[in-house]
Image (tube, rainbow, N blue to C red; front, side):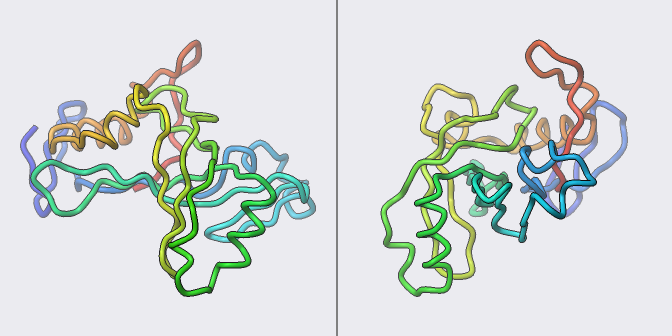
Length: 187
């Protein structure tokens, strides 16, 4: 596996050369994916950054930034978290307000699976609002969780390649006590 961002990398799984993304994102919360398609319009309100289900479950889209050793640019997981109604309403009220990034952080719980890390559903994060036009940043609370360790310590380019291989070939991933993962995460 040798790579650089411009040339991509040689995949040890399939032998092909692939682009090496520094980000992957989830388009909707897991909870929305669980709603039958014929009920989506009545039960789910979703924008690129917010989601409300049944008028009572509230989700924000944001980013987990992971430093990449030797690069100025971080690796980014674009994911969804569930937040309390109070924090969702406050976030919505401040959506276009300058200085909103000075608001205190608040708790959220992952509503996205990142199969690279096993089961990440309901993993607690701290949600920090960012300047207008930027998605919130999430910090994993559990410092022992593999995602929290990577967020705190950073990852190597070799790890970026490993993640790319796992995301390109999700049939190789197995969730705890379950079948191979199907990746809903895109680069």
